[in-house]
Every structure is written in structure tokens, then in C-alpha cells.
Length: 350
Ligand code: GZL
Picture 1 (cartoon, helix red, strand yellow):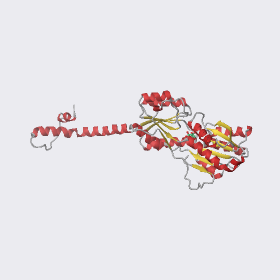
Picture 2 (tube, protein in one colour):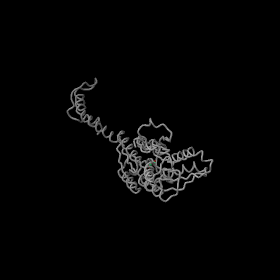
Picture 3 (cartoon, helix red, strand yellow):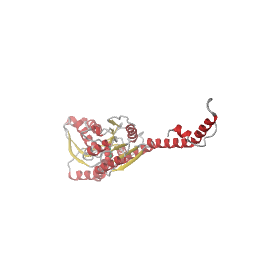
Picture 4 (cartoon, protein in one colour):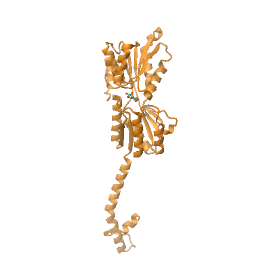
């Protein structure tokens, strides 16, 4: 029964004026019905608004890789705060550094029929099957922070994160500047690299960008490269063994501050003077790394911005509304190096 029919068939509608030409009795009956319907209409309006509001409160399934560094913890906080601030319901899962846990989480998001799936792929490969399932379920996917490698690019809507290759290049540029006098001497400059998680896009990108810049200068020699998995404990252990067993080195290029802080600890235990006897380059720009730069224990800190929450939520809302998003977008990043005036630098927040 339509709204009009429900008015004329609702008993008890009270008096009011009806346009000329209509019989009083019929009008009285109609208005009596309409007035009695007001509470029903009001309830329908509220319910409808609430339903509209509930429909409006987007549901995003987010698979985070873990809490392996202060950077990651800040990244998580940024996403959760941005979702709360935007009234977005966030189904948040922590994979504890396991890809299989991420795949399970994405499958649960599909079963729950979230509006958008977003995730940090711990490694680049192995995502085709589960992303095919999300595509078949009609759920758009946003890749964040780290990148994936898939044959079918339509398996995800877009990427928002940081440019790891450029971060690696910045490390190379710093070395060229730092050693420009020695480059003519021909004396070898030996580099020890503490690499990130094997198979992850930041580890691949930071290695690639760094090598791209130093390759033309034969004096630069990478004498050691091992993965510390972005963990402080592994950075310490690798450095302890390197100092005990060799080879000797002049530079440490570390893919994240967590590993750098562990390596600094091991170097100090051996009586080394990091930042002076050994050049240290690190990526993330955690507060602890900036503090080490101020103390002269580190020579160059390259920012990798973890505060990605507002952009991720904005892009998720675009996807849910059927709007296209950029295939790839990067956060702004800066390089801090020895000699910079850092006195006005605000707290890093991670
Ligand atoms: C980089 C990010 C890396 C950080 C590490 O985008 O994925 O993971 O550099 C973190 O600190 O563990």
C-alpha cells in the first residue's frame, strides 16, 4: 500500500482546512488520517536516517603486518586515529609478520563483505589468489606502505605509501657528498648493508636505489649485506658478528632505524665511535635516530613517513563511493643530515 493509501486508510486523523470544492466530511477524514501518521512518518524518517547513517559508516578491513618497529606502531596509530576521526568502522588485524595470517584476514574481510580492503603486504609476492577472491566478491583493494608484484594489475585499485627506491637513492647521494674528496684518491670505501625483510618492497627498493647511485664509482664496495628483518634485535646481532668476524667496513647503510639502533649498541660495546669512525646512514627518521644524529652517532637520516592514515581513509572513502584513485601515490619525505640545524624540528611522534 502506497503512502497516500496509508493516509486515507489510517483511522483517527483530526480536523484541518481543506481546499474549496471538497466536501468537509471527506476532507476531515483525510486530514485526520494524515495527522495520525505523523509519528509513523517521524519514526520512518529517523530510522531511514539511521539506516542511511549506518550505511554511510564505511567498513574497512585492514591487515597490518605486525609491530616490528616504532615506525610500524606509528603507522598503525595513524590509520586507527584517521578511521575513528572519519567515523569509519575499521576491522583491524595484526598478522604478526606472517603472510599466511594476512591472507586469512583478507578472506575474513571478504566473508564479512566489508566495503573496502586495505593492507600492508609484508612481501611483494603471493597475493594473486586472495586478491582474485576479493575481486570476484566486488570488494576494492587498496595496497598501503609496501608494494605487491602481480601479473594482473586490476587485482588492486591503487597504492599509497612511500618511495623506497628514492629513499635508497638519497642514501647514495649522501655518500657521494660525504666522500667526494676520497673519490679521486681511488681508495676503497667499504660498505656494510643491513637490509630489511627479504622479499619486501622497501628492502628491494632501498637496495636498488642505493646501488643505482653508487654504481658508477668503483671505489664504493658493498663488502657485506645481510637481512636484519627490520628488527632492532637482529641489527644488534648482525653487527656483533660482523665486528667479531669481519670484513672491515667504513660505512653502515641500514634499511631502517630499528636495525641501526641495534647496530649502534653493538658498535659501542666494541669501543667503536659510530658517526665518526664509521659513517652511518639510516632510514625511517624515528625520534631515536634523530637524537643519534644530533649526538653525531649517525650521519644521515632519511625519512620514511608512517603517518599514512588520513590518506588511506580518504582513498578508502573514494573507493567505496565508486571514485577512481591514483594507481600509485607517495607521501612527502625529507632527508636529515649532519650539519643540519635540527633545533626547530618538532617531535617525530614515533
Ligand atoms: C617502509 C616500512 C618499513 C619501515 C620499517 O615503508 O614498510 O617497515 O622502514 C618497518 O621500520 O618495519
